[in-house]
Amino acid sequence: MVIPEPALSTGGTHTIFPGMNSGGDGLARLGEAVGPIGLLGAASFLMMILLTALGVREERRDRVFWLLMTGIAVLTQYVWWTLYSSYLDYLHTAKLGLALGFPVPTSWMLFGVWTSGACLCLLYVFGFRRFILNGDDEAAYEKLRAQAETPRAHPADGGST
Image (cartoon, rainbow, N blue to C red; front, side, top):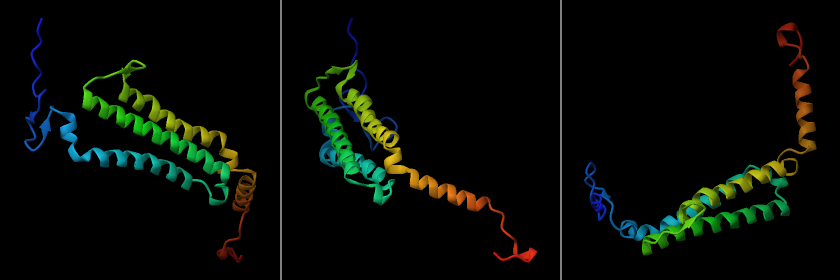
């Protein structure tokens, strides 16, 4: 049985959007955007790490915190560049390997990217008392809460504010 070649498999103008090409050589479609796409992905993952670090009070960002964040940043960059290079390899060779039941780039996306993010979640869970909310913060909160519950005299009742 011979299956006919799918429409636009060798490239062509999109049927609805005339300025858009469909199908064909993926590497040619990417053109000069290959480098900037790689850098944008790397910068996005790095920004995720840095924004997470901004969520921690400055005095709590000690050496251990930065070592953990650096380790997670190295992991995320490794995952990104492996994902991206495996995708570009596929575009160059048209040979697709399988890993864990999926094409290699897809496996990196499904398992690598989520594992990198899970590392940040684990840091939050296990480092919560050290980096986010420690005993001093909790005591300060309880003091503020107690002050807020204390009834205050209203100026209309002859009391002061």
